[in-house]
Length: 394
Image (tube, rainbow, N blue to C red; front, side, top):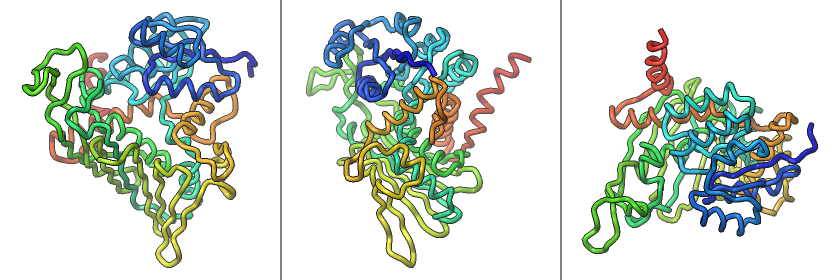
């Protein structure tokens, strides 16, 4: 393994980009060399606040710079394809925020580039890397829950509760045709698949939009609210979604997703039901794993002694010192950078661009299900997407 530090460039200076910088600085042998933002002013401010020497509003200079080893794609969804493709073609390693791309077509294109690229690519599903999530998966594989028959849960937020709340994700041109399913539903499905080791097969979806209009991002033209001079626009993406799910092997599932649930800040919950016991993990109580029994007392396991080897390897602080979202991101990036160096295998599978394509197919299946009012198979969506390409090539 090379001893030289890997030099990272973070493209995007919003919440995700700043969190990537903070996580990278906790890794040995990594240097955050540069940051890019949408304007010179934003890039300069981010560099000053984060202590980064190099900044730019031209991300192309970083994505293709041979002095950069790893490019982090932390921009809005409509830019994922351009930034990640440029970096992959230049031979860089790539870490991309989810969802992988604006839509399935772009995701397939990126996955194809990643498959043939010299550098490695990782999708940013950090919830896989929480110690108690890994512990849940280990207990399922050990048979502690017995044969599992259901996986269920929710992912609830409230940052778009008010009609006056808005940001780029509300705009389909920037965030994609789906918002809640693509933005947080892909996180939940990825977690369910990894913990149960069952891939999602099909979905029955009901989507709803609570607020018909919201303020438009600055610079857009739309109708103006009569009460103010603020520009508002019609909302074309869902605020909440109720999904019935079928996983491989006959595993039943359900999840409720919302960005308009008051008091729920980042409330991801995953429960698994088995013939012997049930178990539940919540992101807002990340160091705990609840285990339910029928004939004996229920348990709340707290991160500490007695964890499985994989979970223990991701636990960095002594028991009683809370580890949460930022620590999961640090664990993911640590595993990614070890892979970039050719190091030891991660205790958790690294999320790939191929995973991202399946998740975008899940999003497309949910949208189609809501339109049809019936079940839609994820493989059906992928097959329908791939068929025209095969016919053209023939």
